[in-house]
Length: 339
Image 1: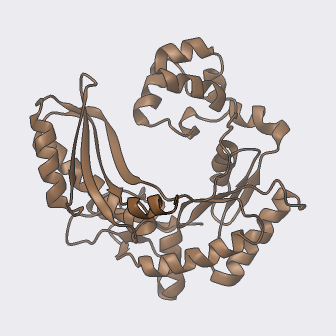
Image 2: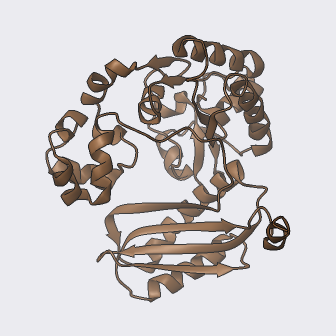
Image 3: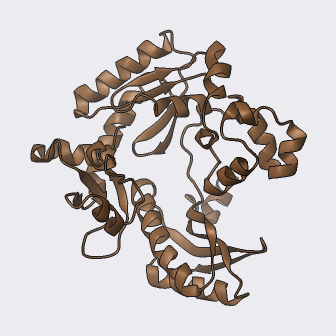
């Protein structure tokens, strides 16, 4: 979906049409934008950006609170449309999903257009689509004709399509990995393809083996219908290590806002049993502090962070936080089912 939350807000409040709109953290306290529309993006505003920074870039940005009950309702309508065409629907969030339409008799490009039109008829919201032989290619293609468009890459077109792409388009490549690739003189997938599996493994470990396939557009992951996840987390690797607990606490607030937004989108009906904070230090050692019976509040996460940081006092390369859910079925019920 195109700017899903912001698009719903503009649809429901037509007076906002043509104005820069963001959804998420409020103006009067520290917060993070969940999403924003294309009018806001022209100013460099983006999702997961602290609200104060977004307002600096776009002073006329209209920041609205999230309405996840509305977003979930619209998402259910869209999900129902998708399931008309295939049972193989893998949701990534409220506004994005993979579909495997291999068994459908229609041409995939025409089918995508039909689905997008149905979504607009039912919701008055636009959607974009990427069509490809696997998840990797389809995901990359979905970004090329936004908003309200689609792009198809046929199997015989994959080599040429991948060759010119920036390496950052490959899933799993973040800012740190991208910088390491740039240092090696690698900016595009065609340049990455010059390296052997062994060379990439030496540079990037196990991920190097995946990179060898991914830069060629090879992705064997199947489309899997949604399963109950056991945990939810978010993390960030920093270009410059964090030297103090105060610096870590500042980043913790941003990550906490992202985690809570993610929780509200995907898992708000699940029971949280544990929360945790993990750190990776400058020397690549790790530590995790986990507690049961605590609510996922900013204060509790700060307490866990302080304990984790105090274990070594070293500068921090990566900070992550998350939570674990209760099993859908209690252990006793699972045992009874075997009798």
